[in-house]
Image 1 (cartoon, rainbow, N blue to C red):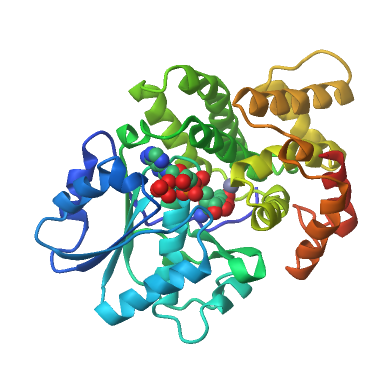
Image 2: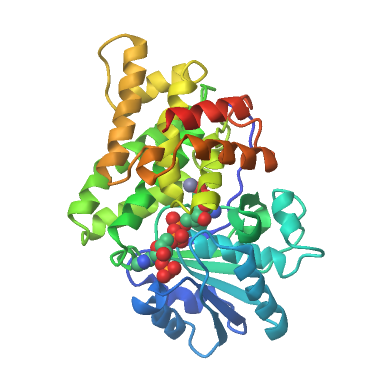
Length: 385
Ligand code: NZQ
Ligand code: ZN
């Protein structure tokens, strides 16, 4: 196992009715900006519940944070924070609202042009405002991690940043708030969490038994409950388990002390920025091709994945690996998520554009061995057609 430091300061308040605890979690004298997305928080009543829980605190609202939150919109929120002298941020929504709030938290007190935060992967963040979250969509793990992904529309650039100062102080996870999710978003969440796990698990062995076994348990839980939630969307226990899987998948538990890949995500981000594909759909397209083309480097972990997660024990090693990849693709398809670029009306001609953007953004040495160069990314995209 690699040496590691594990730090996670986010308090989790989990369960039905937990929004009422905001009164304890948010400082009594805070002037709060509540940030949310398009319309779901208002329509579902979650926003009202949040406002009620905040009681007499002075609060302002900032709605309209879009899926794949944009720098352009978030900078408007930064303006509100500054002019209204806000001192606490509260995100109510999915990964996009939470990621957006992280950016606002850092940008509002940043000395310089805030886009530089993205260009420096967050290394230049030296302070951030305090904030909490109320999660309405289990998927990204943003509610309990220090990462955020922001899109600059004018540049068609979608870039991540990380910094320990943007861990939420707390996150409220009430599984009943996910009952209103459209099936498409439920499926997206399952697949996004699945790929977060593979990015930290399907690399090379470093004898990290705890991380491996937890990752395998999380994957098996998704494989078991993913199809079930589509059939029984009102089942509290299924929702609760999926919510906690998605959080645990990307809160450092399985990622400490092990190599990380993240190539699927980086290529996927370009597809979202260029063609507005849902984040999870980009991952479902890229992962099977990437695993196929990197199967030599990932051989040992792919065999472990085949055996322990998919119970594939017949055939040669190559056959086992291929079957595990096929089962992974079939799982995504069974969740209603197409896994080919052509399913999204993208063809050969689009690959050049994606490669150009990867180059522009310095994504030229991806993966746990930093050997996924532009030629390899092109092969992955071509195999995904
Ligand atoms: O905008 P509203 O009207 O609120 O609707 C949203 C949005 O259209 C809707 N929704 C959310 N909760 C709902 C609901 N509809 C009904 N009932 C509810 N309870 O769902 C739609 C999608 O929301 P979004 O927040 O965009 O989805 P998700 O949570 O999948 O977040 C995706 C973003 O997170 C980033 C992605 O790149 C993408 O920008 N990621 C962040 C990560 C991180 N911070 O660690 C890691 C991930 O890999 C990912 O990259
Ligand atoms: Zn993701």
